[in-house]
Image (cartoon, rainbow, N blue to C red; front, side, top):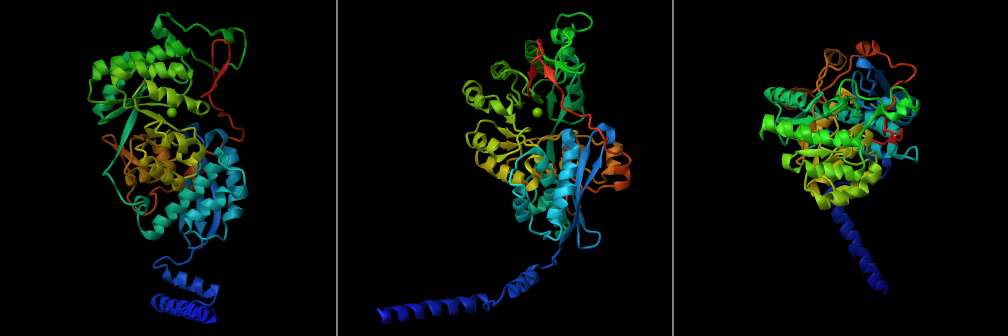
Length: 458
Ligand code: MG
C-alpha cells in the first residue's frame, strides 16, 4: 500500500516537473504573477480609471447623456452613451454619485469584469436608469480599448462582415398619398428600406382622412375634462384601417423595389395587432415592429400560428429575462434592443450571438434620443455581427455634429463610421455646455388614451 502511494506520488511529481519545464518556472508569489502578466501586455501598459463623469447636453430640446471615462494616461479617455431622456437627471446621479466612486482605481482593460462587477454592484439590477449608466461606462471602455489597440471597435469585435450598414428611412404624412410621395423621395435618395407611418402615437390627426370634415372631433374624455390637455387620443379602428391604406397606396405607387416597414408602437389590443398584421400580408412587409407591449409577450405564440409576416421586437426590453426565451422560441425575426437600455456593447454582443443561433437578426433601436456615441456603438456592432438585419437611420444636425465630431453618417442608404481608433466619436464639452439640461424635467412620455379616457400602454 505504502509502496503504491510512494510510486504514485513520484509519478505525480515527475508529471509536475515535466509541466514546469514546458511552461516555465513556478511562480512563488502573487507579485511575481502580476509582474509576469504586466510584461505580457505587449503595447498595453497597465492603466487605471481616474474619473467617470456624466456629460449632459440638450440640443434641440433632446436630453443626451454621455459618460466620459478618464484614465491614468494623460489625454486618453473614452465616451459611452447613457441617454435616457425621460429620466435624464436620475442617470446623471447614478453616474456621478455612484459609478465614479465605484470605478476609480480599477483596471481599464478588463471590460467584461467591470461590466459584471458594476451590473450587480447595486444588488437590484436590470432597470433603465442603472443600465444606461452601465452602458456609458461599457461603451467608454470599448472606446478606450480601441484607442489603445489603434483600431476601430468593430475590429475588436471581429472585423467587418459588410462594407456598409443598410439602413431604413422614416416616411410619414397626413394622408396615404403624402406617405407614398415621401417613400418615393427616400428611394430617390438611395434608400432600399423605408418605414411608413401616418400620425404619431395618437390617431386623432388621422380622422380628417377618414370621412370627417375639418377639425377632428374632440374625444369624449377631453369634453369631460378628464386627463391633461396634451394627452393624445387613439382610435384603434381608425389607426388599423389607415395602416392598410398606406401600405396599399405605397405599393401601388412605389412597386416592389422597396422594402416597407411599420411600427405598431404596441398601442392596440393584441388581437387587433394580429388581425392588422394578417391584413398586411399581401403587401409583403420587411417587418412589422412592436405588435405588443412587453407585458403581452405571450401573444407571440398566437401571432406565429396565424401569420408569417416578419416581426421586430425589443426596444422596451431591459433585461435578459425579456429576450432569452422569445429568441430561443423564435417568436420574432429581428431583435430591436435599445443598446444603452440593455447595458452597452458587452451585453448587446451576447444578444447578437444568441440570436444568430436561432436565425434572429439585429435591428438595433436608433431614434433621435440616442447620442451620436450610441449610434456609433450600434454601427460598430452592425459591421461585426453576421446576423445583422437592418439599422434605423439617423441624420445628425450641424449642431449635433459640432458637439459630437466624428459622428456616423449615411450615404445612399448605408451608414458608415468614422474610421479612427475607438468608436470614432468625440465630444466638444464647450459646445455641449451651451445646451444645458433643464432643471425641471419636462419630458415625460406621451400619454395616449381611449375615447373614455383609459390610458393605453406602449
Ligand atoms: Mg418601435
